Amino acid sequence: MALFAIGDLHLYFTGEDPLMLNGKIWQDRANRFITNCKNLITDKDTLVITGDHAYIKKPEELTPYLDYLDRIPGKKVLTRGNHDQFWEASKTEKLNEMYGDRAFFLQGNYFLYGEVGTKGYTYEGKDSLEHSEELVAREADRLESALISARDHGFAKIIIFLHYPPTNILQRNSAFTKLAEKYKAEQVVYSHCHGERRFNDSLKSRHHGVRYSLVSADFVGFVPKKILD
Ligand SMILES: [Fe+2]
Image 1 (cartoon, rainbow, N blue to C red):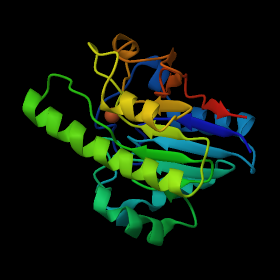
Image 2: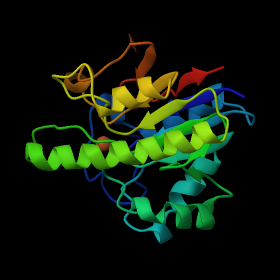
Image 3: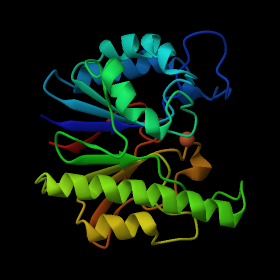
């Protein structure tokens, strides 16, 4: 019943990788990832993939990705990344209706162990500070609703999955770290920071009693990180 996580696989099934991620660590990633998963994950385990899945634009286009995930043992839980155009937050229920027998879409809801998830947001200098603050507030609201719902349903062990890092490069605390502390989350797991220059953008150890882990695929070498035994 172990829980594993990884994010930012940036897979593609036809044509060229839109992001041109062609450094050595990204080469043959689809096959390497399957091999690594088969060596680690059993049918009893769960794998959470924290967004930036496969550049899919519409819910109807998910089948090749779900077929790919079917080759990995265990349950799959997916969260939203900034490249996941197929997934508007308001369509999460619909995605679970369409594909719930193959993967669980985690957004503003919760799953088996008390996992809660939302995309999150972090100021990266790409938009105005004002707009960025609005997005952080909206995502923090979504996270808090999910935390309340998990707590009200009796989950004692809360693990938060974000796509964006919980803090920006200048912060040690944020709306997300405060929520993790308020609801006594055991861990916060995130990705989005890929490329060596980004690996130290946010928290990667214990902070105010919460364990933070970066699970970007290139950071963990396409080997899912074990989050819980
Ligand atoms: Fe991302």
